[in-house]
Each structure stands twice: as structure tokens, then as C-alpha cells.
Amino acid sequence: MTSTATIADLSTARDVARQLRVDSVRASTSAGSGHPTSSMSAADLLAVLVTRHFKYDWDDPANDANDHLIFSKGHASPLLYSVFKAVGVVSDEELMTGYRRFGQRLEGHPTPVLPWVDVATGSLGQGLPDGVGVALAGRYLDEVPYRVWVLCGDSEMAEGSMWEALDKAAYYRLSNLIAIVDVNRLGQSGPTELQWDLDAYARRAESFGARVIMIDGHDLDEIDQALQSATDRTDDRPTVILARTLKGRGFSEVENLEGWHGKPLPKEMADRAIRELGGESSLTVRGPRPVTEPPANRGAPLGGPPELPTYAVGDKVATRKAYGDALTAVGGSNPRIVALDGEVGNSTFSEEFAKAFGDRYFEMYIAEQQMVAAAVGLSVRRYIPFASTFAAFLSRAYDFIRMASISRADIRLVGSHAGVEIGADGPSQMALEDLAMLRAVQGSTVLYPSDAVCATALVRSMVDLPGVSYLRTTRGAYPVLYEAGESFPIGGSKVLRSGPSDAVTLIGAGVTLHQCLAAANALAADGIQARVIDLYSVKPIDTATLSDAVAATEGRIVVAEDHHPEGGLGSAVADALLAAGSPALRMSHLAVRELPGSGSTAEQLAAQGIDADHIAASARALTS
Image (cartoon, helix red, strand yellow):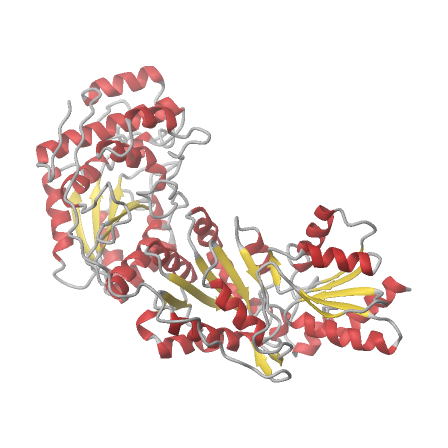
């Protein structure tokens, strides 16, 4: 059976739904893994959406006018890939031989290796938050009336991030965001928390400011009317469609039964299912195409390179302040730069950008997961997002950061108030794990400036960095070390002191670099010459400079960091030198090894053994 239509009637949509179920069974059985029953429950919803309401040019996935479809329930990938077959962009052969196979693009959960997929999903609770970012771009930046459709599972409605997303969608009046919740009652290990209590879901969604429509998710007329109502935009609220469905819909042997989550049907059982569902077909149907509307004029930079702020050597300036200054500078020359913050903009200094470019600033309040997700969504629309908060609180959003990498998203994270250096606030506010956390992200860049000049240069470089990049900033104001205009290439470092008689190398970044310089002065008074390295680029790291220093100082190095010993500067240095085969390495690693409390900066650094006195003592021990 073969057919082509522009906007299908409901009879055709019903045939498409049947085909989607059959192909979900076929693909997962062929692969020997997958989630056919989770796909079958939502097949009617997707069939009506894609054939009648989803405005998309399948031959031009980069078309700015296209709607967006995000599978927040990414485990239903058999359904998504079956949709791709139904619209003619994936062949039946690829569906049957490429799904979940090594080296193939139809991965177990969707990723943007496929041009029709915006973001990676599969870690539940992330697709809707990502959709908020895409919808923000549509309403406030692109000013193009595309819609963002998000298929959600009922299990993931237990994730707090889903409610963060609805809250921010309502706050920002994202009527272009439509969440379709597949309420099929059954999760992975049994019934979901609310099962089919659509009224309870509705009360919750409405309390967060959404417009709610409740339907039978297998009644195509109801589905069609709900989708049309969602696009009418009678008010400025996001829409949540609660669809009551049956897991495994269409095959009596598994329909609405526990124990079939994430299990392909055995071959004989799959054959019976395909017969019961009506057999294989090759229907090809595409829905309405978008009306091309160019996005608002936010394309090319406004002129030449930005005029970065300048600071005099010796002036005391916090790197977090330099971040705000630099972000405002680069934002003035590039209209695609946007900023987000987690309600600490007066501490991260992102408020400087907000004052200058309020239409490109999005306050996410105390919702760090949503902040990172919104940055990912904005990057889908090719904006350049900088998202800032206290470095400690990025740990709350780590799964979103990890998934951003899998999404191939280009996002820039900035964490202020790092380490024990912050002083009296105590350990709940001290990021002591962030360098390890961000270093572990695939393809990430991790930067840690020690002065304002370096910080501004790194912000400028981050504009063009691919992937997930992270800038760690310091609370306190410290002397400017470098002349304005100094270059800080990514992957580089700076040798601040060196000489032919260097006996030991001191390595620091941020506050500990200043402590290393003080320690070098103390050592010089004792007749011990120390080389001092500013390791502002933690990943990628400057292996060549480190290796030269090890060779010059006969393997004697002291690494001091305001971070736990695991995964930070010391780990980065050791990894690089061991990989380079540096001989006779004698390394002293000073880090935060005890649980800190409250106290002044000086007290905290001394208590943890990372101040100038302890650095000098370690150097003396290595040279004695």
C-alpha cells in the first residue's frame, strides 16, 4: 500500500498509526532490543500530529520556519524512527537493519546525528525543559511562529524538571509550546504514581500555569481537535494535552499488561502482532509544510571584534566581575549571544548583560536544570548561550550538562564562588567538585582564569567554542597580573616566573596562582628559585609547557588547587604528564582534603593547606 498526501484525512492518519505500530514491533524485534509497547501507546497521537498539524519541510530540516518535535520519552525511538520512515526520510531497510546496530545512526535513543532530531533524549525529564529553550527562541528572538511539540511519558512526570519546565513556560507565556503526555499507566517496573488519574495531572499542570486538554489518546477525532485547539493560541499559556492510552495498544497479548516495558517481542510473537495489527505496509505521508518566514534580524555580528574591558596591572578585580563586563562587551557586537542566570546575576555579574540587552537575557530563577536545558534549546536555534550560577549549583544540573554533550549542543557555563576561597558562607556554597565534573564531559573545555584580563579574553574565546565549555570564576578581587591585550589561547598556559636555576615548579589557577606567586617570593628569599605556571586552561591542557617545566626542575612540581583532590588541577596535570611519558616526576599535590566550615578566606586556605606557606613548605620538602 503506497500513498502520498499533503494534509491527510483521519482515515489516512489511522492507516499511518497502524503502520507505526507494526514498524515499531518490526524494528525492535529485528534489533533484539527496544521499547515497542511504549511506542505503540503513542502511535495514534503521532500519526495525527505528523499528518495533519506538524508543519515541517522534511527535505529541509534546517528551515527556520519548521515546527520542532522533541521526544522527551526518548525510549520510544521505534515510534520516532517509524515516523521517519512514514514521511520518507528513512528507508524500511535502514529501519530494519540500522536500528540499535553498532555504527548506525538509528541509535537506541534519539540523538542529533539525525538531522530531524534537535536534542538527545532518553534521560527522562529533559525533552520538555529543552523545548522551553527552543520556544523561548521562537517567541522572543526569532519571532517566527513555529511550534514546539514535545511527546512526554507519564513516568517522567515524576521528575521535578518537568514541572520546572512548565513553570518557566507559563512565566514566559510560551503558547508555542505544546506538551503531549502519553498517559499509558505503566512504567518500567509497574504502574506509574498516578496511573490514569488525568484529573490529578490536570490539577498539577494547571497550577503551574498551563492550559490543559484531556483526551482519549486512541480517538483520532479527539486527538485532532486537541491538536488544533493547542495551535489556536487563544491565550499566552503553554498547552498540556493529557492523552489516556494503553501500553502495547493494538496487540491483545501485551496490551495494558505489566512486564513488557523495554522488551522486544520474540519473532513468533511479533509475527502474531503484525497479523493482528493488519500487516506490513509502506504508506508514505507528509503533513503541512511551513510558511517560510525569515527570523528576526539576529544574524551576523554588528561590526568588528568587541572592545573588551581593560584593567590596569595591580588593580584588584574579581574574575566574576570581569565575566559580566566581558559578556556585555561581546554581546554588544554579536546579536546571537544570549545570557541566562539562576537568580544570582548580581553575584555572577550577568546582570550587567541584562541591563544592556534585556531582550536577550532569560532569568531562570532557582532552577538550574531548566537553565541548562534552556541553553541547550537556544543552541538548537543557533544562538550562543552563556548560562551562569554559583559553581556549586551546577552539580544539580549535571545530568543536563552530560546530555548537552550528547546533543552536540554548544553551550557556555559559568560558575562563580568556587572553592573554599569564598570564606564564611561554608561548604554548602563551595564548589569543590566542579572541575572534575566538567572535565568528565565528552568534548568539554574547562577554563579557570586567575585575573580579570585572562577572564575577559577567555569569555571572548568561548563565543566560538564548540561543545560544552565552562569558565570557573572567583568571588574575591585579586590583583590584575597581565597587560591589557594579552593573548590566552585555549589549551595554553602562562609561565609567570622562570629562570635557568629553577629548582621547583609551582602550578596554580584562580586563587592558588596568587598563592603560588607569594610562595615563590618566600622561596626566593631562601635562595630557592621557583617556576610559576598559570594553568588557566585545565582542559585542554598545555602538556608541552608542563613537560618543559618538569624537565627544567628535575621532576619537582607542586600543584595547588582550591578543589577536591579528585579530578581537578592535580589530576589534569598528572594525567597529561604521565601520558607524555615525563620521567622522574616528583609531584606534591595540595588540595581541599577536609570538610571545610566557615571562616575568612585566609583561614580557609591555610586550614586546607593550599596557601602560600604550605605551597612554599611543599616546595622546600621537594628540594631538600
